[in-house]
Amino acid sequence: MGTSREQAGRGDPSPRRARAAVAAVFTVHGAVTGGFATRIPWLQEHLGIGSGTLGLALAFPAAGAALAMPLAGRVTRRLGSRAALRLLLVLWCASLALPPLAPGPGTLCVALAVYGATSGMADVAMNALGVRTEELLGRPVMSGLHGMWSVGALAGSAAGTVAAHAGTDARVHLGAAAGVLALLGAVACRYVWDAPAPEEAHRERPGRRGGWAVPRSALVIGAVGFCAVFAEGASLDWSAVYLRDVVGSAPGVAAGCTTAFACTMAVARLAGDAAVRRFGTVRTVRAGGVLATAGGALVVRAGSPVPVLVGFGLLGLGIAVVVPLAFAAAGRSGPDPSRSIAAVATITYTSGLVAPTVIGQVADATSLVVSFGLVTACAAGLVAGAGVLRAPERRAAGVPADPAVRR
Image (cartoon, rainbow, N blue to C red; front, top):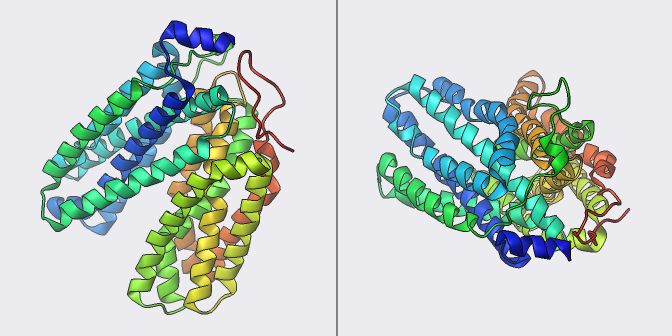
C-alpha cells in the first residue's frame, strides 16, 4: 500500500505502536488535569483568597483554551503532527508548575490562562492525530483514547490526593509531576504517526486567513458535542448536591456519586470502540442518547437515592462516547482536521464552562429538578442529532475503509 511505503520513508512506527503511543499521550494529558484539580484547595489557602475570587480565577483556563485552540492547526501545519504534539504536550505539562508559583490572584489568573491555552492546543493536536491514527488502522479508536484520558485523570487525582494527605507543598508536588509527565509525554510522542497535513489544508482561501475559517459541518457536529458536555458538566458538578438536597441522601453517598459517575464514563469510553465496530457511530450515539435520556428522566422523576444514582449512571453511560466520536467526525469533515477539531473543541469547552452556571441559575429561579429537566432535554438532543456524526462514504488514498461506517 502507498501509505505503508510513505510510513517507512518517514520512519513512522507500525499502526499498532502508533495507537499505543497516542493512548499514552491521552493518558499523560489526563494526568495533568487530575493532578491539578486536587491542589486547588491548597492554592486557595496559600493565597488567602475567597470562593468568589477563586471561581473567577478558575474561569481563566477555559478562556485561555478557547482563545488558543484555533492556533493549534497552524502549529501542526508548520511543524508536522509529531513535532507539534511533542512541543504542545511538553508545554502543557510544564504549565502545571506555574499556578502554585503565583504570588497573588492576578498572577494566578495569568498562570491559569497559560495553563488553559497549552491544554487546549495540546488537546486539539492529540485529537487530530487520534483521527489520523484511526484512519490508518481502519477501525474506531477515539472512544478508547478518551477512555485512557479518563484513566490518566483518575491516576493524576489519586497521586494528588496522596500528596495532599501527606502535606506535600503543591509547588513541590506539581513541579515534580510536571517534569515526570513532560518526560513521559515527550517519549510517547516519538512513536506517534507523523501525519502530514493534506495539501489543500496548506492553501488559505482568499479573505479567510483567520483561525476560525471552519467547515459549517464542524459547527453542527459541535452542537451535538455541546449537548453531551452540558450533561456531563452538570452531572459532575451538581449530582452530589442533587442527591443531598432533593432526595436527602447521606453526605457520603452524595459525594460518592460524583466519583462513580466519572468511573462509569471511563469504563464506557474504554468499551466504546467495540460498540462502534459492532453497531456503527450513528447507532451507538443514538442508543447512548436513549440511555442518557432515560437516565435523566429517572433523576427528575425518582424521589429516593437508589433510582437517582441509577439515573446518573445511565447518563454517564449514554454520553460517554459522544465527544470522542464528535472529534472523529470533525476530523473527517474538512481538509484540515486540526481546524475542524479546534472548532468542535471550543464549542465543547464552552459548554463545560457554562453548564454548571446555567444549572445553578435555573435552580435558583425554579428548582434543581427543573435544571435536570434541561439536562434530559440535552440528552434527547443526542438522539435527534446522532446522524451528523456519520462518516462520509469515501476512502482516502491508501487508507482502508472504516468498517464501522454504518447507516
